[in-house]
Amino acid sequence: MKKIHVGVALLFFVLFFSTNAISQQGKTQASTNNPLQDTYSEQTKTADKGAKQKAGEVEYNLGEKYLHGKDVPKDYKKAAEWYRKAAEKGFTVAQYKLGGMYFFGEGVPQDYTGAAKWWRKAAEQGDAGAQCHLGLMYYIGQGVPKDYTKAAEWYRKAAEKGNALGHAELRTLLEKMYPGWKYLLFTDTEYIFINKNKIRRQKNLVWYWIMNVPFQESHSDKKCTKIYRVDDCDSAMCGVAGYVKYDSNGEAISKHTVKESEINMSLVVPGSISERLHEYACSHAKAEVRKKEKAAKTEPCSGTGWPVASGFVVTNNHVVEGRNHIILIRQDGVKIPATVAAHDAFNDLALLEVKDTGLLPAALPLSSKPAALGEKIVTVGYPHPDLLGVKPKLTEGVVNSTSGLGDDPRALQISVPIQTGNSGGPLVNMEGKVVGIVTSKVNAVKMFKWTGDLPQNINYGIKISYLQGLLSSVSPKKRIDTIRPFRYASVEELAKKIKGSVLIIVAK
Image (cartoon, rainbow, N blue to C red):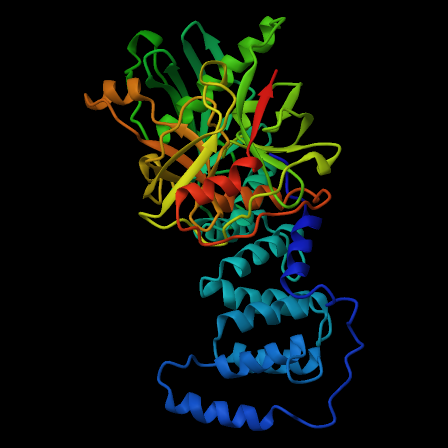
């Protein structure tokens, strides 16, 4: 995945406030009177009577008026004063915004220490944006001492709340802290890595190192356990061939090696962390074998894609990974060459770019809300185009679960039927908004081996928030027209509106 650099993260902060925020700094004219004093008095009286009014909400609302110039001249200094009153009463959003004003020097002298102070207060109350920003402060050492361990801690807290930027920054940071190790995920107590440079294949077996790093205090970031694991990629079995435990100084304190003939192999449990490791190691090993063999030809791969307003085309990473020639095909047969602009292998997402965005059909709008359990959705795609033809195929269903296999928080379980070629297609609700991206169907053979049941119509999509995180990592192309959301009365009406925006992707 393209790394989200510090400059991009800072741009995220700027966009949170207003497009004119920095240019207007210092130009705000102080008001000669206080036009909101009466309003404040009245709202305060109302707040005293209304039990549901949150402490600081009145002051926060007045700060918003001065910040945006609603009913009063825009005045950052007064906005900061009212935000401070609200923040001191524990109003989380006011603490968050006051931190931003200190960071950029809007209405108050620029003070990174002050920014960190107020973001910390909001972060400690569970605000994911403040947690992410405080993590960045520790990462770059502004307002607080540089401390990667604390940065990781706050990024993790933001990621636990589904903050896509927090998750992306956590991955970037941890891989910087542990060179050569690829961060895969975190549990309730530790981060889990895999050594991507030391995966060894021996026929159907794959040997590799994983590392478990517990959540720790600062300056003890060398404490970890490294496990040498072997997986049978054909039978989905795994075992431990040895381990080494390290103390906080990085010194090995215990180690153990198992003879190959004595390794206890067990079945990889579907949906488990073990399966995530198994799939990564086996797929990585197979990919390396393919590279070494330098196959002269690669079978074409087909999938589905669709444009977003920023001028990129969305699809699955596995559709285009390792392929140099990518063609987008519109419904009228026009072929458009494309290249990969950014990808997120972990979430199986890719953004494609074209030279002339004017050739792309209208973009599909992205939902700002997560998909709801039971919500009706459809997808349009091109399954098996060599057999079923190149006309778009629509299937419909509902959101069966707001988490994936093994309660994976990134995924949606859907009843929408999908086949090979649907990969990358949009999952669209009845307002015409994309709530997810088709990624996979459950492995029926593997599930049958494990449960004895043959699963039917169990499919998955990645949530739209992870696509939004990837989009934030790249500079927008020339914007293209977007289909306006609308509450469609029938699937037929919805299909008629969106089908022209869905493209065939052929990658070689």
